[in-house]
Image (tube, rainbow, N blue to C red; front, side, top):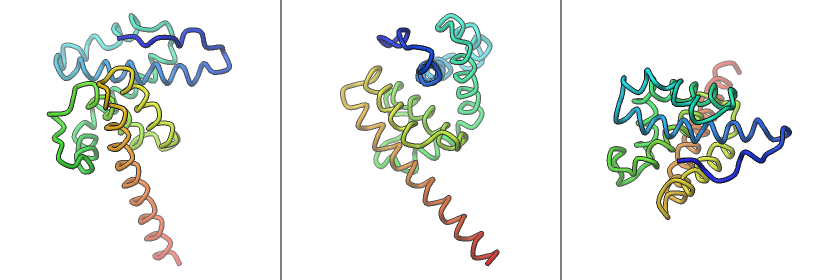
Amino acid sequence: MRPAGGAEAGAATNTMVDRHQARILAMQSLCQLEVLADDFAEDLDAFLAEETESSAARAYARELVREVWSNLEAVDQAIQAVAEHWEIKRMATVDRNTLRVAVGELLYRPGVPAAVVINEAVEIGKTFGAADSGAFINGILDGVARRRAEAAAAKAEQSTGVDG
């Protein structure tokens, strides 16, 4: 499951390429974790090393996988909260795990802009998922990001009201 291109990118864009590649590797790893669980968890580093020479991509993918897997219930709840008429377990495997990677970034990596996370996930969905995966992923992540922003705004307003 390797996407076309990517290796040609120059050093100036290496960080973006590494993160894009890392997100793909994280999605693929989560797909395998669903099936193999602890058996694959032990082989995660070997899988990542086999799939990319980039230590930066391996490190970021490993962090994403561990964050999502250790917070899977919270990540899935965030998805389920906006996935009207969809049960997570009934979503396509690639879509479900692409969403998990993106929601993990939205929840646990506030320094990464939501627009970047969503765009990357949509592209991964288009590359690895079904014809409508990109639109499906976009809709779910837009809802998650909107809820996150609303919660942050309410928290900021509450703290301003308490302090002021």
